Each structure stands twice: as C-alpha cells, then as structure tokens.
Length: 368
View 1 (cartoon, rainbow, N blue to C red):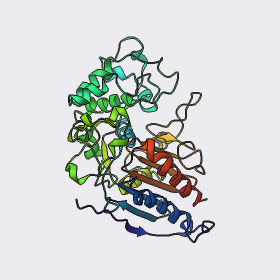
View 2: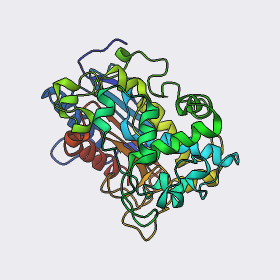
View 3: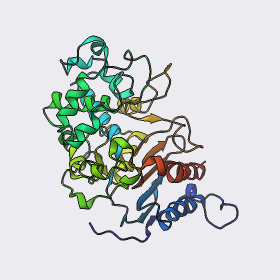
View 4: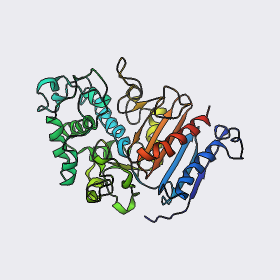
C-alpha cells in the first residue's frame, strides 16, 4: 500500500452542522481547527499518521495526515477491538445460541473453580468479572510468540481480583474469554466468525481480527517507542513481539488485535446509532449502548464505554464508543446524531492529551 508523508485532503462534505461560527482570532471553523491541530503534530515530527472522520446527517468530513495516504489507511485498532468481539457475542445471543445471564462455565466447563462459577457472560462484556486486565505472564507469552490458546489457558486459571459483579475493573482477559466462548459455540475462531457474520453485514470491507488477508506493510506502523511496557514500549528487544511485529498483528487478540479503517469503524458505530436490525435485533443493539453497571463505580454498556467521560467535553451522557492504546478513539453521540473516529499511530498515553481529547472536544463543540 503506497504511503506519502504529506497531508492528504479527502472528502469534506458539509451540512449545516459542520458550519459553526469561526473560531475567535482566525477564519477557521472548529472542524478545520481540529484538522490543523492534528497536522501541527505531524509537522512537528511528533505524529506519523492519522485519519479523522466525522459523520452527521449523511455528510462526512474526512482528512488523512502524514504517512496515511488516504482515509482507507488501515490501523491497528487496539481496544476498539473489544466492541467488535462483543458484537459477535450479541449476534449469537440473538440466535439463541448463548445467554448473557448464563455462567461462563456453561460454555467453558473448566472455568468453574471457586468464584469462577459465578461469572456470567455479561460480566465478561462489562468488565465486572474479577479477571485482570492482562495476565501476569503477558510479556513472557508474547516474547515466546505463544498462540492465542495459551492466553486463554492462562485466563481460565488466573485468580479473580474480586467477587464477580461487585465492581468494575477494566479487563482485557474478559473479552479474551468472550471470544473463546464464540469459538466453542460456533466451532470457528473468533476472527473467522466476525469475518463471516459481522463485518460483511455492515459493509466493513477493510476490517479484520488479526491481519486477515492483509500484509503487514499494508497497515499503518505504530510508534511503539511511546507504547506501554506490556506492548513492548521502549524495549528494543521487543521488536519481534510488539505492536508492529508480524506475531502481534497476526494473533487476532479479541481484546486488541483488530485492524480497520476510519470509514469501517464509522459504519460500525452507525449501526448502533441508528440500529436497523441488520446485524442484531434493534433491542440488542440498544442494550449494548445502555448502562449495564448501575450502582457500580463506572458506566459501561456491553463492550462499549459510555459517556460523557472519555469523549468530547460537550458529548451527552448517552455517548458510547471506545478508545485504544495504539492511539485510537471512536464515539457516537445519539443526542447530536454524530460519530467521530480518530485513528493515529501515536500511542494514547501521548496522543490522548495532545490529539484525541482536544480533537474530540472540538468536534463535539462544533455540533450543538
């Protein structure tokens, strides 16, 4: 996939919602200011690649930056992958092949010791199962290029941090086991199930769990020098297992291993913003984007994080979406009829305060 290092200006479709008053002190609208903010980080050599896509009322604003040659640039989505995994689970629920209220041991019989017997599938999707975010042996597994099943076996055995359902604690291992439930129920690896039953239904032609049919060079490089330690950040010896390695790109981790474009993630969000029953029942789609953790220490849907925290400061409480540690953020606000997808190559611990959050603030403010 050919890349270039200059700013690529793509579609700039405008509706009244995209024409707020100019920003004080210059002639730029908030949307142009958002694009300028991203381009400034490219020009400064801080950011290598990014795509911004904002959709409202059938009109789209999209820009590609840096080495992202176009809006079709494919990024490692990181934890946005969790929402795709959750959608696969919900498709099976709609078909009557599993129940969210059922104990996980119904589908994974070995997950039955002690308090594990009380963990439900819904707990896995709401981060309330008691499982840890990553396994203690996470880096060692990656270092030796362990297959996905080794992570599954570790998650089946690892101690719970608290009684199921009593609190929220962000945990990637819950989504790993949710993906394993999909595999056990369907006989297909999660990546294959999503490729057959989810992505084609929504027209997500450039999305895959793992690489799918992509070659690594057809994807955007992550700036792993800024990554977290569990992703090999700053460790030159981690290059064969970090986010850019063929190993990690191919693994298809249900909690963070999907690839996709801004347009595809926009389509995915749109299927929940305006559910039509194509992928799952309208009631199921709405359930995913409504609070399922009342009384606990966070508001979570099924797979989705809920607003307003973490998205634009002027987003409503009904906003849903997810971010990713590779430097990605995608959200939809039903009250604004608005979707926003920001995909960057700069890990979120740096891009969050520099790009993701200020751009989201500008986008939300531009659409009252």
